[in-house]
Length: 256
Image 1 (cartoon, helix red, strand yellow):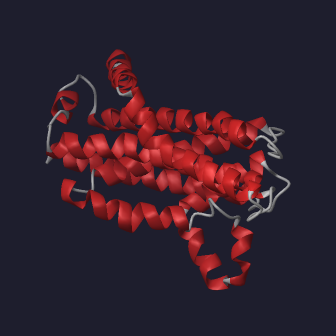
Image 2 (tube, rainbow, N blue to C red):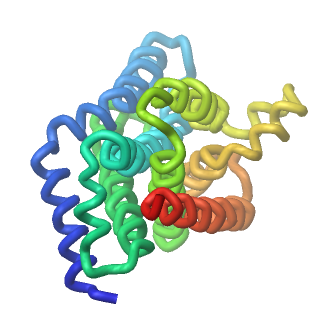
């Protein structure tokens, strides 16, 4: 493998992200921060929800921010590059195996997802610091969860970007991303679905459930969450599947 070419591709994506910094920040962080403000500040200060809800909410917002940022960072450019601008052809002509072009896309998406998630932490703390009981008592577990969530978002973006056409972007958000967010236990813990036993079991197929519960278990372990062993194992299985499926789909689309 030509590492210099791989690093050059990664540097090119980093430069594009820097040039579009404002647009990227607005696109990926505006909605999560609005949710933090409305649910974590307005509703708690007005007494409509308990103050403890702030601590339950923030890990889920971080999960959503990471997942949406990683998916959009990989899927949206791929859809345009394969079907409109054809810029992907420049990358495919580089002296590097096609698989590593896809791997570079995944790594670039992971980095953007982690940045998006980490930005939410101080922003959320500034808005909701009163009674926000975050804990970083298990930094290694937190790092593992963050990496798994970032890989899930980037690999998912790769698979979607190679499978969805430009005319189907709206359907992708309506049929895939929106249900994933609302049933991903981001705004409530998985245990809150105990009154809906069938739904509680069905949502376990949603990877965002494990992302939200994993971040909740590492940042606010005092609240109910899925066991971390189950979270890490499930996220690892999802990541392996998405990476394998995404790479296979990318190779097929690149040579077609």
